[in-house]
Length: 160
Figure 1 (tube, rainbow, N blue to C red):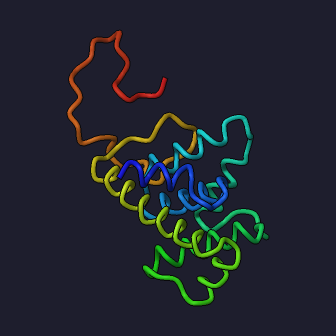
Figure 2 (spheres, one colour):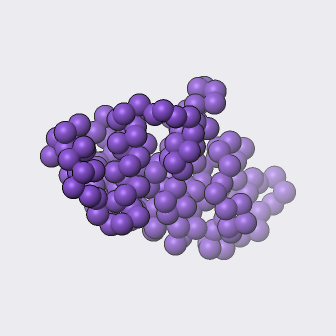
């Protein structure tokens, strides 16, 4: 599975920014803290409010009009996640823009990251340190029992 993830994350035919956008849409759909916070904080460090705009776009909001390729990624991923398929019209738009291999890569990216996000949700994997607000701040940070620490040790997984 690691090789599939490596291909889908770093080597597929969808341009990097659009592929990351597809991952953000997927993470938002399954309310995954790690995927959303990590992707935004890593990519948007030093970019001012662009992270907020990317988060808003991943949730279907944000500044419009979007670029046509962003709107297509949003429409394709949202339709796939909500209906578990895409219409002929959406498929045709994606194939015209990215080719057949791009459509397969996009479906693979969404499917792979749904799997990864659901595993992390089940494990209650905390998000990385980020200024990105969590989706559900009342969600427990972890199922794992953390041993008591001395006053001089930082909490395991805590942002510093």
